[in-house]
Amino acid sequence: MRFNQGDIIEDVLAHIGQCGGEFSEWCVGTAKDSHSPNFRQHGAESAAEGLIYREAYTPYAAAEVVERLAGCGLRPERGSGTGSIVFARREAVSSQLSAVS
Image 1 (cartoon, one colour):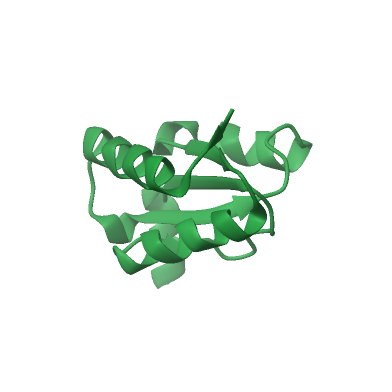
Image 2 (cartoon, rainbow, N blue to C red):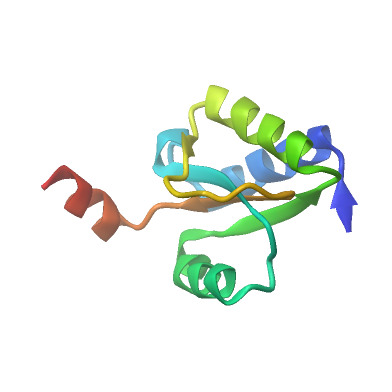
């Protein structure tokens, strides 16, 4: 099911509110396909970190959602692809520690 930009933003922000954490602990990005092996592997690894994803109507709309959520304090996902799937995940504590080292 495809969602409009406002609904995606509301869903992601509500999800973050339920899972907790600061916005800066969350990454946001886009993907082409939620059924691809790479997304599934990433999703399985991120399940404990509160992965949420929604499909926008176009890749352009998805990019705008990412930009707006980044403006709220979420960090853009490094290596995120171009696509209509918007995802947000809480970065694992171990990942944050290795980034600091």
